[in-house]
Length: 330
Image (cartoon, rainbow, N blue to C red; front, side, top):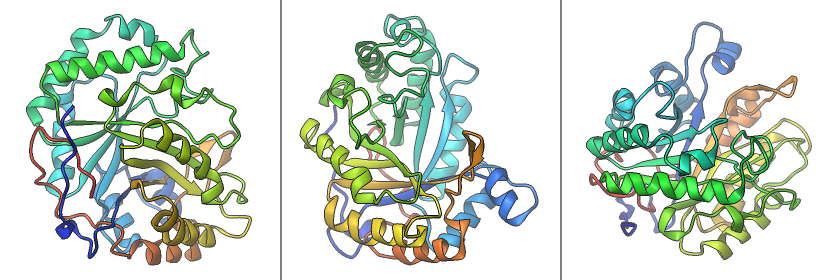
């Protein structure tokens, strides 16, 4: 695995301490609801992208989006224009992929090697570094690739990840920055992280997803114990918050945002080097969830104020990272 490069503060921070930030920016369900009209997801719809950045008061350094598994309907080359659109804006790609209900053991045993090799060759040909979040929240019970679901086991997941990674390395796709992203588990309910971790040679960044779903869960409580476990498991790896947000409720979403972004992350989570907001008014479990920063004027104002800090690296100057390299810590 290529060593992580170190980028000078010229990327946008005025001190030696900073993190990347960005969002999954949903269109129709979110901005169609708040503003009316027709919207699609970023980065495909630049109107959605620009609207989020305008509301946040700052250019994102990361654009988070999703691509299908290569054996389903598209190769990497089909997505190259999308990758290039983000890079040409001076921002970083963070791309999620789900293997869906396909057996992780079958993938590890080579069922889709031809499609994976084609994907990896396409990634190598494009060359620029990007975050790659494969099968996120695998430790939970709700994903089709999780242990105990569809006949999958933790060992199968690890074998699948290592197999995919090996194929990418063989193709020369050293620009793929592998992000291993389980869900937070402050309740110790899910498959332990150490059973699912592919190993330091196969992971570039670790990661956590977590949401304040009832308005009462502080950022420090929600992420603290899981963060500590990541530090024990992979102490040298930078950490990403891959998905997060809060509902309106409890002490208030605005207060939660201020505490998370202005106090907790800078002061208590020093190994977190990237933050991705889930800006999607999504319908799940028979209800609409108010995850976007625009769910209230106070929430948007709190987010805008917090993210204005130089601690959060602005986009616009991140498109020229060296080809065939990993994304470095800021």
